[in-house]
Image (tube, rainbow, N blue to C red; front, side):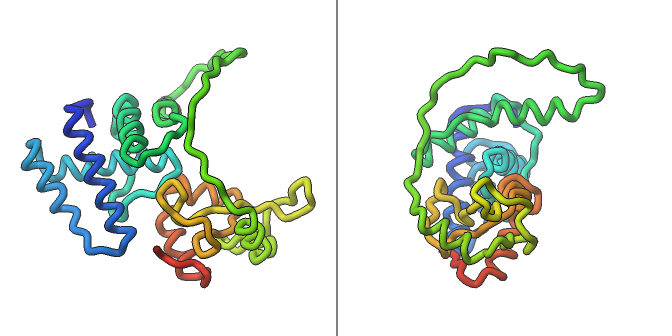
Length: 224
């Protein structure tokens, strides 16, 4: 994806979020209709807009967010475009987050290079303050879910990898539909996961398959 026109990128991101809203609501969704409308409005091909949607999926995956079914993340985008997509998502969803897209895109692209030189790093990294959206959660929801799990990850069904400093098996709470995406802070939307499964469900290529498995196998979970 190239930098392109600001209005065009805004329209692509808005279309993506609209499709995601319909998918979560269980409504019939024909992605090609959106690609066609964008192509008629801005020119280009439907395939090109499908690719741009996959770029948005990639940015969402870097943010640890869920992406649209069938639009597998595609990484062929410039870091500057990733930043613009990240900012548009933040604006359209009315939430503030710490920016990470540019850093993650650059790090992953550099990691693909051969024979990287050992970097000197920065012994005194600069800091800056940012305002982010914080959700107030009910501690009883987490406590109940952890108690029900009994020290067993509800995804891989294996024992927690270690105990915390409090002596309890270490599992992490995950909201199937994240709070940032309008998900509820309820036991019907939360599972207890080991760190490995938790990371994979946020950033892994098989995240959607894991979510589908959880819905099928954890009886308390309910789709909104």
